[in-house]
Length: 132
Ligand SMILES: [Zn+2]
Image (cartoon, rainbow, N blue to C red; front, side, top):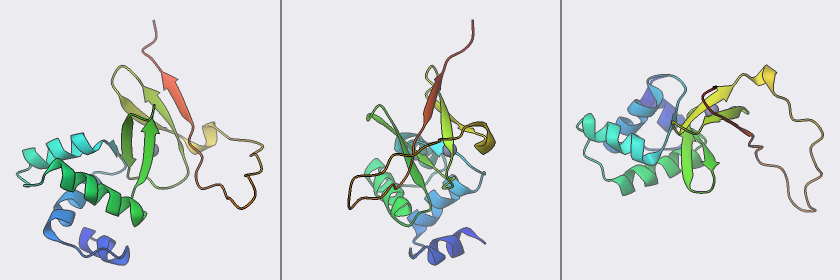
């Protein structure tokens, strides 16, 4: 599926800006980016977008389930192109998220969510540092 089709099947009109940002996001396999990083990439690729537009577009992609959000400490938000259920290593020194292979971490015994609510997503962040 090309990127325009991917947007259309997700209910998003493939505008020029959405296409350009989607191209940066989805053309290189699974990745984790912040809005600031994506904005820098867009500027380097001569895509004329503001940081606010990048934020809006990322939120639209999230609403269309093309991305999921991973928040670290409430201050740093990464957008993950892999929307399947998976967990992350966080390398603090580089501010980098790395996927944990699904077979290597299992969450057992989920709590019963409060009445009238349901579990939406489970985030597990394993913080790592350079050894030694
Ligand atoms: Zn991930």
